[in-house]
Image 1 (cartoon, rainbow, N blue to C red):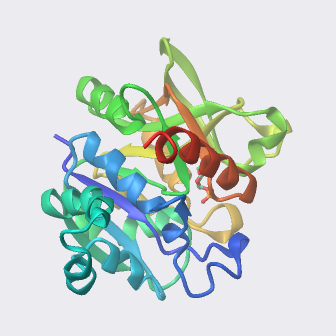
Image 2 (cartoon, rainbow, N blue to C red):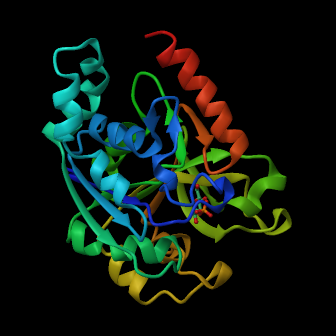
Length: 275
Ligand code: G1P
């Protein structure tokens, strides 16, 4: 049903300078696996095999990562190190990767619109790789795909955040239709706490219907003079066509140093150390 997942991956990652000077921020690793690989694995676990990546200048390492490295693989063939590449080899075997470049950084809405050429006229998922999500047994995007199958409309993942932090997020307002599922009637990008419709923040998992592209084309620049996906989604929400889904699981904000360190510790304790 949902066959493609879009990964906006053109941003600079200035909070991690100098690490991100010559390396894409999506290639920062939680222990031994880059952030974007966790995102791809989550999409794959949701039954999606078409990975559509919006890159930019200085991002070639992403393409190389999702490709075979003949020299390296030849070197370690037959050694115990081979198993370290098992996950990524599986991804390369079963997924297809397509890329396009965002020439100018004009906001998340602009990045998603740039991806239209890769996605086409079908519903699709979006993962922001710096929101790292863990959930058992079903990954967050799989939970959302299931909900999409019932409702066939756009869905944003949401979580409760402290009121004073609404200025960091897109924030929704709406009616809770069933446990954790909100019919959205308000969406504001990075509101001051006093203006926020709630403390339910959008996090980096979306399922979007393809009419979003035409809407994005006619949406004026919003917060910070950038084309915001939140504003475009509000057009759909005004027609009752957007759900907010309070996902089951935990999200780490790997766009911040603190969240990144917490996520690193989580991965070390739960996956790496545990083998
Ligand atoms: C983007 C979106 C925002 C959303 C956030 C989730 O903001 O514009 O609505 O809440 O991702 O991570 P950014 O973090 O790119 O500034």
